[in-house]
Amino acid sequence: MHAPELALSLLVVVIIVVSLLSNAVVLICFLYNAEIRKQVPGLFILNLTFCNLLLTSSNMPLTVVGLLSKGHPGAHGFCQFVGFLDTFLTTNSMLSMAALSIDRWVAVVFPLSYHSRLRHRDAVLAISYTWLHSLSFAVAAACLSWVGYHQGYASCVLCNARASAVRTGFAVYTLVLHSFSFLLVLLVLCITYLKVLKVARFHCKRIDVITMQTLVLLVDIHPSVRQRCLEEQKKRRQRATRKISTFIGTFVICFTPYVLTRVAELFISVPVSPDWGVLCKALAYSKAASDPFVYSLLRYQYRKTCREIINRVLKCDSHHTSYHQQENGSANQPGNSGNLQRDEKQHTEN
Image (cartoon, rainbow, N blue to C red; front, side, top):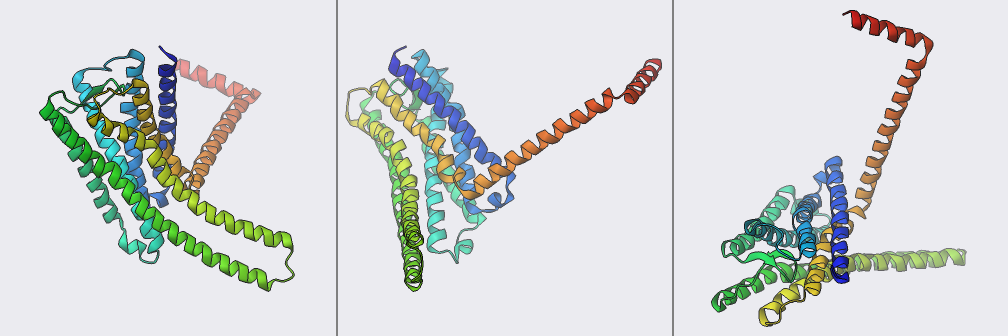
């Protein structure tokens, strides 16, 4: 095996491990904390976590097998099913990100009427749409036999046909798929999060004005305290920009190389280099590993839930250890040893 293939295999393995652990933690937090289950974003995050876990356990390992074996990782029907899952899960996860961005936009722009505008019923309807949208494209590709093993990506994905008529239909399908998944979601993310950033900057500006007015009134304030307040204002503005950049930036970095490569395949007869194709696919896979941190685990509520779970596990372990120590200590006492011998004798007689 060449060094690039080995490096790509290790990269995909690392992505699998991180994705499984992080998404499993998000799922545990959702099941443990009733407050997270009551919130509308929790349903969108649950759907995104489900897609990421299924994608990690089905498609990513086969990519590693394809890289190591340099061939078809399984039977043709099995590979078609995995390719179906790849189209369905990737599209579904993208639409879930769009739903989360719309939820954040409504929460920030309409905070007073948020609970009346977005309810659990609305979230279930939105998730149902993401499933129908994703299933329609995945089923169409499976029925037309446009899924299978692609050597350039070492994965079971959408595959181009050789016949010119079929190739035209496949090209139209691919363009429509990426237009109504990648481009649509990118447009929604940009519109919603830029509006959220605009509102956040407006609120930061109001807070800054109040802070400056307070500093002017407090003429006897120490210069270090004044400087600390000004630095906090700057950090507040940077924090809002950094969050929005993370939401949009991770989506663009992870999916853009793969989508552009798939579109370029339609118009260029040169086959995709396996190293570049697998790298693009690995970047797309990395979104499943980064989503838990971008949308969940870095938030205060999830971090608090993780601490509660860890403390509860440690407390149970300490109680279990102390209980066994007490049992062993009582068994080693002289009086208890006689009782144990007497119990064993009665048990033997019975």
